[in-house]
Amino acid sequence: MLTVPAGASSDPPPDLARRVARKESQSRKARDHYTYRQAVLVEEFPGPGSRGGHYREVRDIIFSPEGQRSEKVIGRVTSNLNRLRLTEEDFRDIREVQPFLFVEEHLWAYTTRFRGEASIDGEDCWLLEVRPRQIFDGQRLFDGMLWISKRDEAVVRSEGKAVPDIINSKTENLFPRFTTIRRRIDNEHWFPVYTYADDTLPFRSGPIRMRMKIEYSSYKRFEANSTIEFKQAEPDP
Image (cartoon, rainbow, N blue to C red):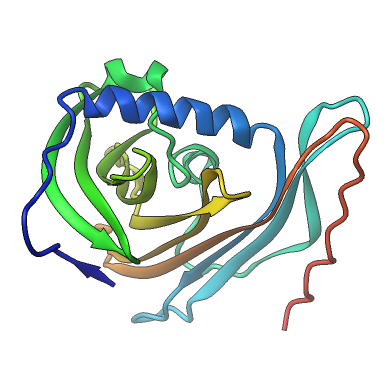
């Protein structure tokens, strides 16, 4: 639940965006040394002349014995989407934008604005609006709001969407608004644990309501001499 804190407010540091980006860079470097499981579910709701459907996949982000990071699909990918089609940009967003990290090397690409304070799940936060300064051809960027913990200047929540929508005379590639929740892992790093979206995409052929859920679980720090084991993905109903 979200509330606006009562009582006196505390001003953010004047270089809040830069401090957050420094913290985010540390989080990315740490996350690159963790294995985890990523489960994706995209649901299309029934509409006029459409029965709806879903897309489901589970991947383990793992390391080889030589320390090379890779992804392994677990179980069977299932898809019976009707009108919706997942594109290269959708899968890129799942990798890069939904678990968005506002790292130092991205500072030049965004403008930021302090938007006040809020409390989320007991964490007092500053709100930082992050918007693309300019979008170059082929780029996928985040446009939305970050919740910054006052305790350690870490991002604990993000809300927004991947941009740009890609529209031309023949095709439309539209993207939903989403929320990503982070939790503290190993009492140290704030990593994404859950992304969800429930949005109606305004296609020219008619609106389509869709829902997306991404779960990031089983975070384990990789050590060269460690063995990582995951439970098997549950079979489709």
